[in-house]
Image 1 (cartoon, rainbow, N blue to C red):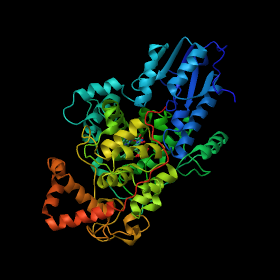
Image 2 (cartoon, protein in one colour):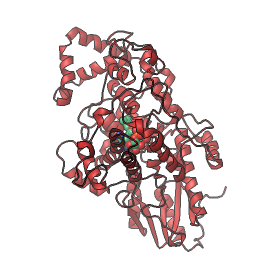
Image 3 (cartoon, rainbow, N blue to C red):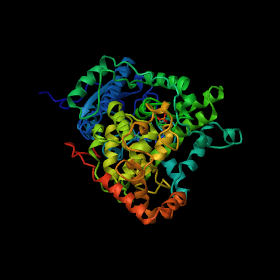
Image 4 (tube, rainbow, N blue to C red):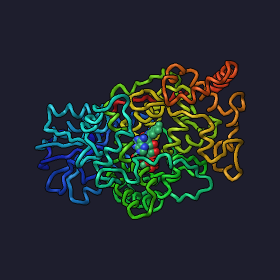
Length: 544
Ligand SMILES: Cc1cc2nc3c(=O)[nH]c(=O)nc-3n(C[C@H](O)[C@H](O)[C@H](O)COP(=O)(O)OP(=O)(O)OC[C@H]3O[C@@H](n4cnc5c(N)ncnc54)[C@H](O)[C@@H]3O)c2cc1C
């Protein structure tokens, strides 16, 4: 069998300035990329370690490999010399290549994962390698890592996104007047964006047809992939042209309703008015600034409301940048953060959704298994709300999110899951995002009392669930209710000190001891049904 790496003979190509391309750096107009073939060459790396590190969703594996190979094809067609190699890991791939090619210099955007970043930076001792910041001018993020640190150092107490985000708006001049004041007189219109989407018509997603290259990758993934549905109609964008066309479609068709229905849940509409742009953004196929400016432009043209434009822009330049800054600030401790000391292993139904009879959970988990995606409110208020209430260990939940979502990379899933989702740390979250069935009912359009109007039956998970969202205890009661009150009781000491939890803790205090005991028994009965699935996979967080 021949070696995949031609390392025996030095290269005959006169390599000059080589840019190393990692799988999430796919915008050739950014950073260290040569602008013309005469300015340098490209080294594109795939790694075996990464492919087998986690049981990646088959669509995610297809997406990453196909996007990288499309990049290679496109750059070659544009006249660039591209070395496309498979290595054990990125650092080894760079070293082997540099020994063979002996370029004058090598350049790489700072890798987005903690362990890979450390290994690649260590190479600068021995190789003529420059690591460029992945943020700031020419980067994939708006701020350099140092700029976020500078901001964070000025903050007292937990870092707060709502204090960070106005700085970014002012810096970019987005929806601000000449004095730096926010359009509409306030920075956030979040309070206006809480509608349920009962009966609302939702435009379809403009999925793409897989081309011959993607089909080839799909055939390979079917052999090596571990988990997740991969039908013939894989439709995620794999090129910058497709990403731009998705951006245009979202701005034209869906942004108008993004704001009002941002927090809605619908059984029959998995995507609602969400953009799905995290996929191309995180691959480097789109830049956050161009995405945010496109939304501001729609508002300027009078096509969308301020609440929709601002709501969307806040996600892209606020939450996304904030989460990435927090990741670098809190690593490596974030991986093991677990202030609530939750220890329960991940139940089997996260991998096999049919094994739970909670309708909302089954729907969210099925969406992930079928598409590698579910929207924010489903990630936060269904999946991680349940994980927090049931006392699942954050690291195990984080591994599942990382493997299962098409847009998941450690820099973004870990802070979201461990920090925002499971309250494993208080470093940047002021209270746990937990709720009982009443919230889930409301967001799926059911009225507060009873199971609500018939019209919502096919739209609202609670309307078809075998459990009753209005009961708190007993075998018919929705487990979210008992788990919720039992969670507050179990963490009474910590949560009573939290001003933002005061109202709910006051309600708990009004329950008599018998009621609290009945809640505990119902929660215990539910927890006793949970079965962990020992997957035949090892989870290697540092691989790649
Ligand atoms: C438990 C949990 C896990 C998550 N895991 C991921 C993940 O692995 N990858 C990921 O990109 N996002 C993650 N998020 C954030 C958010 O849910 C997704 O970015 C969003 O659902 C992606 O879908 P969309 O593009 O349709 O988003 P939209 O609702 O259309 O939002 C627009 C964009 O805003 C950005 N954004 C919004 N919220 C966040 C956030 N909290 N963190 C980072 N970016 C944000 C994304 O780039 C997104 O594309 C997670 C959130 C939670 C609560």
